[in-house]
Image (tube, rainbow, N blue to C red; front, side, top):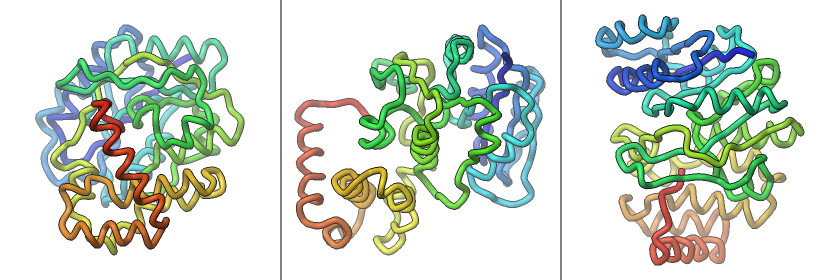
Length: 286
């Protein structure tokens, strides 16, 4: 079996260079590396040497299309039996491809894995499941982001990324794969480095949103409302609305919006869980 790598990037050549160096250091070498550049408006000349080093194909999109469209274009360009996805700001540890390959050789159709926080490698996020379960998916994405996800190309050709979703694309894909009944496995080991809280990352952008602009970010929850059921749907929506509340302006409006969408009880439960995490000093979540 062979592995194609799809990397999405936008205006982050320095991060991409680190990600590509991680690919170059893999003990198992991929068949091909496809870089889909989502219409960056800054130069990637500084990365050309390492692009050549891993013999990558660099596709520069002519208009900004979003991460999911970029990933779907990457799928179309791949020829490997397995496609492994990597965000430009994360880094695979040297055994990553070798470890996921072993799962495919034993019959897996899709694989996720745990990670360490880049720069704080003592912070390790691992789900102990050996197979992806509904119990874990109901709680949200308790596995990893896209940099720890891979899947057989034949599956992805039928089940593309949902380009209408502005966020939650990893969780959405995981739920759809699970409900299709494919062999979806988790490796309960930290196999890559996850760059947490980028200045231009999703978290930073959400903090600047006005309450009226949050609705698109709730799309994945509403899409899978039946899968989630009442309790988990309300929990997910309250977490999306109240995420990083201490950094937001007009906190009362955000709290009022949560109560409007999911009710008083679900909103209070959000604050109870936040307090418990603080007391227990639980590690970061993705």
